[in-house]
Length: 178
Image (cartoon, rainbow, N blue to C red; front, side):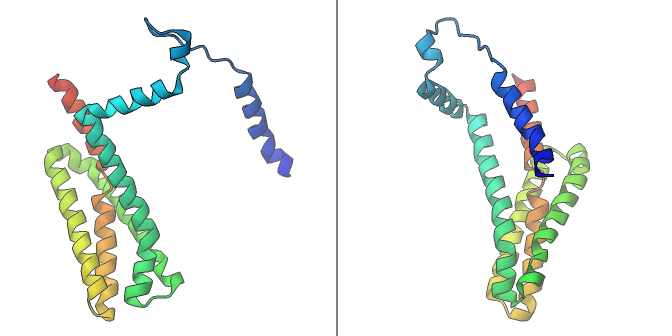
């Protein structure tokens, strides 16, 4: 049974190793330059010299940081500040993804009827409100902490759900201006 599942992986790996890839050299590149790993890294980091690429890079880093941070810490926040058991607090991750999914579904509509900048500001305000809710949950009484933390988790899920869509729309509008 185990070999049955590993066969496609082994077969595709063998086929990829047997496939040769011919890369084209640039106009003035020598063989040594085309194989230089350090040059590839330098060229990659030069892309960050473009302000739009740099902002997209930071936006993606923030988006992923918020996403991973919320997934890993939301249950811990509910355990610590609302006194919930781990099994009950684990629902916070599902709550986050429910609101993230709702944000993606409704965001496609809002991005058609609102300006990208307006929707971006709304999303940032939602994430700022989520931080305020989480602060209230962490500093308030234990009986209201659960409500504040749930509200904060839901707001960050919804607010952080359309970052990539807005980046792509911004990229398209930048191309139209050029």
